[in-house]
Length: 344
Image 1 (cartoon, rainbow, N blue to C red):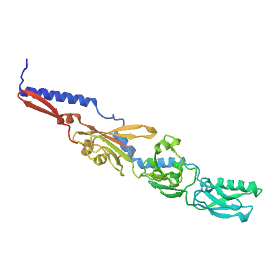
Image 2 (cartoon, rainbow, N blue to C red):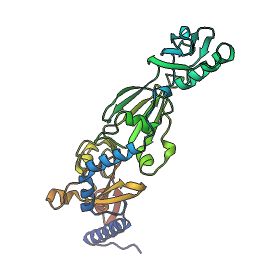
Image 3 (cartoon, one colour):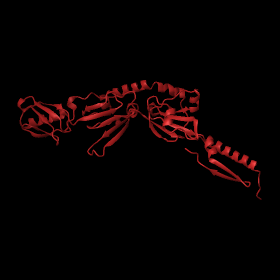
Image 4 (tube, one colour):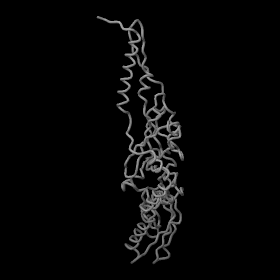
């Protein structure tokens, strides 16, 4: 038999159901658990400049021997001075042609493109020894560098364009720019034109993996024409109950609150007292820092500055979200339920 209950009784039952559902949702939790105290994170951030200096010093200690002129890789357009010590009349200044050759007395065209000056000198010696001279000694000196260039851009102490000396790797060319600046991120972009200028290739290298984790495979060889770019700022990722989740540039001394503003601010159901900052630590470890905007506004907690590659996760206040969305319709003793998602 269908029973009819007073509307006040029905309302109380419905509210009890809502509270029960919300309590269940809150108990489930939503984001990562805190693993680091805010005070410890503040202490580490205040030492970030010293950390950047230490990182740069460590990077420079891993650089190979300084390149020598005889290690330069010859390219088209270079002007070479070729000296045969046993025959002064064979000395010539020659420019490398489009096909990578130089023209020498008695020998004609000699292919030298892609060889170091040391290798090219040995090749010329062997050619003269084979037919014309008993024990020749040849020296090749680059008078004008044309094709062998690399470009260093961004957060380096001395960015610019440098002559390309072959057999160099990423850390070697970063050392040409005297290493990273204090505001440099830890990700390097290498843009390589290759054979098709219309379809360049871009490599993204995590310097932590090389310098800290010791992954030498990422210390890749650099080729002529490469553009090496170190971003002047890192990236912070903002997710959860914010209006515009995504990744944003890290400005100097940027705080967690400012990063959330960059992401459009909180949604109507954000839990402003429950924010997690996931931070990458040395040796690949990750820490989770609990932050409360409510405490910051009240002055009971210090500001936390954002670091490169931080992830900021804003939790949702599930009780507010549920109560906002539920609609109760009372009519003729019956109860109707509806749900409207909260606005962003």
